[in-house]
Image 1: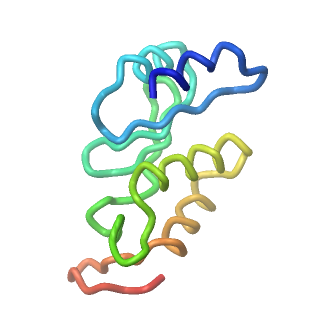
Image 2 (image 1 turned 90 degrees about the vertical axis):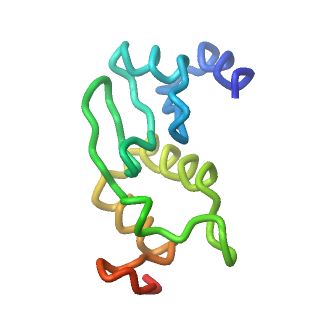
Length: 112
């Protein structure tokens, strides 16, 4: 949201943006300064700092936006908030698996 992005300069703390995969110029500029963002890249949810990224979930394995599951933008916002609060990638990954229905490698639905 461009209006929210403009408020980042008013924040005393670290700002963590999120991007659903559209390739936002604001997020790209933010990352180019070594800051953090939660991104969807290559079918994965990634915790990115500058040019480095740590994948935390495969989108193809998650049930998102159906049957009461969280929508993607809501999930990314929750992940960004968790990361901003100092929660690490492993615990975030576990949280995603706990919150979302996960598909197994054989494409069977597993409630995590």
